[in-house]
Length: 295
Image 1: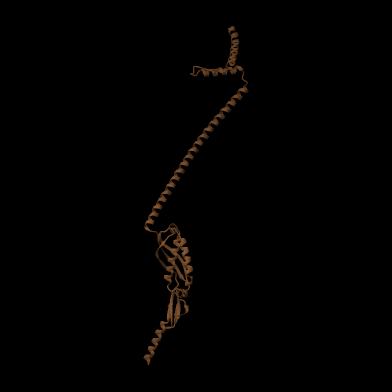
Image 2: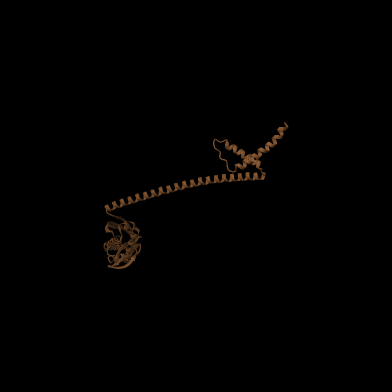
């Protein structure tokens, strides 16, 4: 009898132990009784009825799902290999368990189908430069479609968009030619700016030299004008007589005659001046004769 009681106690303990379940902090527990959903248990120790209830654990952490690569035809009929990564998290453990049979397969096919649609509407160059646009649109489509499954798609990232080898090589040649063209344009613009700056410098130098020459001539002319004006004023203020003018004229003729020229052209007014010189000669003669006679 005692052995039977001990055996019964051990069996009861084992059965009770099978009803104790531990749920981790990042998990939710779905408890079913005879195949029917009963309740959702949080993290910690949970007791279920053995043989009548079962516990289904759902991971609530953000998950990463890799979308396998596939060939996609672009708008300009180029086949490219495209793959992506989908980040999602479960918001409702009940929906993700009971509303979709195989969530991973469903989200994979959904992502592949919409990738074909999105990339197929773009040309090759647009698809290569529109990763952010494709990511945003695909995330929105997947998020809307998976809402009834109790899942929120947080991010979608395209891993690669790879064209065929011949197209890639042609793109490299095109890029190289474009870079060489830009380099030649930049070099030509540099030479052009250099020539312009050099010409502007030469023009500025010529202008400075011309301004300096002009200033020198104006200064000399102004000085000569002031000198002539001063001399002219002094002459008029001194009230010179015809005799003095005649003497100055003779001095000027003497300087002219000192040159190497064999011909001397006298102005028309010379006759009048010579007349004055004759008068001066008569004057000297009158002064000299009495003195001579006295001697």
